[in-house]
Image (cartoon, rainbow, N blue to C red; front, side):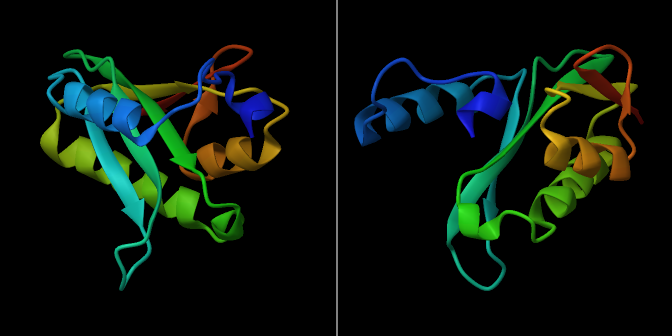
Length: 127
């Protein structure tokens, strides 16, 4: 997974570190973060978020950490839902993301959701 995401923690992430980090980022006005949970339960499997929000655009991120949920369309549904929320509640012109082209599963999701490549690793979705 880390090979395809482009970032990897350089320390072991403890519950205390994670709790401190989430408390800090949830206060950041340039970010909107949402948990991805399985319908009908409170099982957390990942997150979807916008960071670096400006008046024009924001950077999109998604992470599904539970492998048993990969390939089930959850990433696509979360991507569509966050783009819908963005259109409704933020007056942005686009959202963008960075993806390694060899991450073919992610690229397929993003293209299906309307993103297009504008560089080697950058994709945008016009809103």
